[in-house]
Image (tube, rainbow, N blue to C red; front, side, top):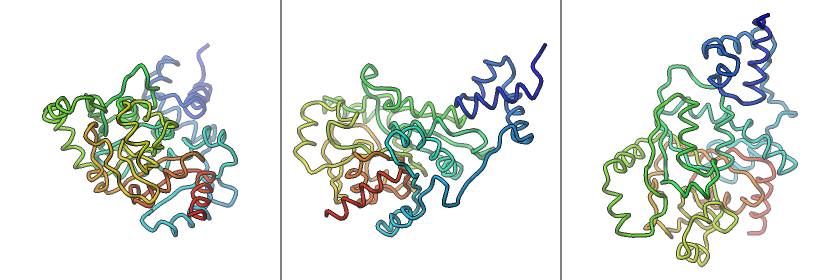
Length: 320
């Protein structure tokens, strides 16, 4: 006997909301059309099989007090969203779901979206659901740095994978930077910078109205650091760099440090700073110094993080 509509709606809802499957994957699994999956999810919400609640009281996940303190400490930070967390494990499991609807709101207001790789960024992207997105909005997703050695990089650290994931969720065009992020030869880099496929991406960067970035440490604890050659590692280690965004380094006071720009192909620091909205998803007690430098340098104007990371930043400010 075929499943009833209610049975199918329950199955579809579990796959979508609990297992984070895309609607196209659910359609294949249940042998139904994608449009029918959308109808089932709507039916699940309308019949209270699924209830979506947005809690903004004291018992919610948001720490409004910490958000208010951060905005007062860093006036350039137009918006911040702090998830209450009592452990790194809780943050790892929940920050993506916390960040997704916030990120969707920014995406709904944007046209050309640049994105950099990162574990927190990737988890948030995968948690964005179709119902969070505004229908009829045209988007373009663009890669902001070249690619890495695919044998060494996990999926979340591959710039092209992150762009592809975002474009699939938004059902929009994706533009890839088909070159390495780091170039050993100065002459090869000079030639690549004249390639039409790359200069076309440069022109898109100038039109970005939203960038979604991770913030990395400037040391061996960073996944990105492992892709540098020995010369780049020495330059960074001998500097005062504490963090990086899209391979652009800065110190804890927020000063920009042009350390390896002659070895990389990526959206420049100047281009990124001109973007109307710069959102970062960043969490982890070990990211405190990097986040503090990014906030002081005004490299971001919207932040999604957790309470433990904010505590670390506040302790660093007391020490300074």
